[in-house]
Length: 419
Ligand SMILES: [Zn+2]
Ligand SMILES: [Zn+2]
Image (cartoon, rainbow, N blue to C red):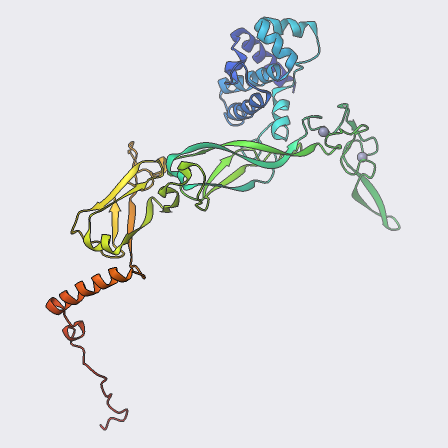
């Protein structure tokens, strides 16, 4: 502990000497909100945590510096001093011993955000890691096609920030006198004359916690944790497969007793629906996706399918118009599939063949469906009928005859063949 403190102080001095701008350190703007400061601390402290960068001195220094920058900027008073007088002002303020901007060990600060004792579980830190949390997030196909940065919110158990996870309103947590802080005591039971057994039972005074809080925190009622919504950024990358799992390390339920587990997001596709905005009404909204290919059904009238001379504008998922057409005399048979090369999904960069740097796409499959009118105007019906009659008499074939079919029923041989 003493060694860590010395190391900490040594690093602090280095930071002060280097005097890197706190806003730059936290990768935030001058007018960043408290929420942005916290968000950035969460991100950077995980990135530079010594447990994740074993043996990397510069990461360790950065971890310590990020913690200091956070503590100065998250406190209104010290932030104002820093904005006005910079690092010197902060130094003077500290020497003056004023309140505010009090310093935590950077590992303690980390544990206020992620639980445990400031070290990672399962990553070599030897700390217990809490359960992972899984959520489904649905986005429209359009986002899988174009890529999009968005956000989602989950409700989770978080360490109470009012009491910093102590459960105490005034910060005082006393060790239980009855069990000496162990939470359990040894009871001697006599089994038979001269034969004793020692059993461990939970301490009744502190309910096995080992600690006693006289004034519980009013926000969490002493439970040290609260339920609250947390918003995360979500980067839907072009061509990500449906059902892809995205891991947010240590963003599951928090507890002072363990390091938060991971939040795992299953990215799924929303049911296509007609929206109100233009981009929610394009044909592309209703494309169906299978892997890297897209599928679309285009309806043609009998005239179009048979006689040709038509064009269709299909709006793709990125708003581009794709034109389909046939010249006069070009027939489209029902259920024909036309394959438009490279008009399918972009291929996710993680699934590109080795050494490929260009964007690659799947194909768009257009299936033509032909609809026949089931009602016609009387005069129209007459016209068509007579046209058909005329040409049937000239060129008509009896398909039955062509195929060699008999004209009437055929008598089957009786079931008792004589051998
Ligand atoms: Zn609390
Ligand atoms: Zn006790």
